[in-house]
Structure formats: C-alpha cells, structure tokens
Image (cartoon, rainbow, N blue to C red; front, top):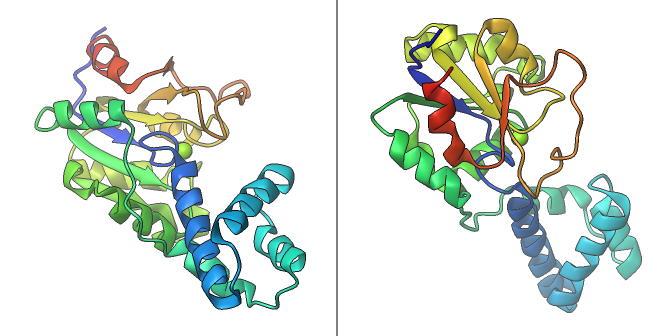
Length: 226
Ligand SMILES: [Mg+2]
C-alpha cells in the first residue's frame, strides 16, 4: 500500500550535521579563553583537549585539562564558554540538498534532545530555522520528555496538521530515536553515516527503524514507496 506522506521530521545531532563540529568549536573557545587568561599556547591546549576526549570521553575533560596545566579555573565557567560558542556551523551537504528540495513539498520539523540552551545555540549556529515549520527541543518541556518519550512526536504531528501515518522521522540513534516515533505510528528511517557516535550501534529487537540509508538523498525515493 502506498501512503501519502505529508511531513518529514528530522533529528538534529549527527543526522543533519556532524555533532563533533559543535564540540570542537566549543573546545576552541575554551582553549582561546584559557590561553588569554593564563598565557598558554592555544593550539596546544586545543590539541590536549582533543587528546583527553579521545582517551577519557566527554565527562571530565576540563578538570583533567586544568590539572594537567596546574591551573585553578572554575569548571562551570569553562562549561558555559563551551556551551555558548557562537561559531557558525554547516549542515551536511546531503541535508542541505534534501531540506531545500523538500521545501514546499512536505511540512518539515525537527525533534532534538539535549540541554535546551545548547540545542537552540546549535540551531542558531547552523542557521536552519528557515527550513522548518516547527522545531521541538524536548528539554524545553523537561528531561522526562526527551526521546524515547512519545510526547514530542505527538506534539509535532498535531502542530503540522497531519496523521502519524503521514509522517516520517529520520534519526541516527537506534537506542532512542525510533521507539517513541514507532509507538506513535510514524514511519522511521535511520541514517548511518561514516561519522557519529551512534553509527556502529546495533538496535535491540523492536528498536530499529523501518528503513536505513547512508545518505539523506535516498529519502525522497523511500518516501515515495512507503
Ligand atoms: Mg542524533
């Protein structure tokens, strides 16, 4: 049976752009701040941050860095600088093409998790608001509304004025992106790129998307054949 799809809804991080781009810009701002304040080599600081990230993950990077340089800086200040980075970011080329070609054909939305101020900052830095009829940052409603909650999907289709079966959700994370969306009744598509934290994750049974793609340009043919 061929369904008429009226709305296409996207996840943000690692679906429309490479989240590591934001992370790196944030780290650059922190390195710049510390280099000015403590007369340290900015490039070396940035390289050290990336090294700590590689070895220890995202948890305690700034603590480890300050210990290494023997500086007593308020970690909260550094976290704020990181979160508020205003460097412009680029969406993926395929995302740009798809968003432009879908303009006017489908209602368009974004549903994204993460600290609200940071997600809105990313959206501003990417300059993508113009592409969408509705952007839902789930954290604006509280942490219990983060995916896999069904809430944002129901809100989104209500706002876009379509039924769940007329909407598609595209995301990258099989641990949470498709669960709520499937429960509500959306068709789900997983994007598997070369880069991104979730690209190698295996979904548990029942948590996988209906379909998967390696490039968002594949979306239009998928949508025509749902
Ligand atoms: Mg994501």
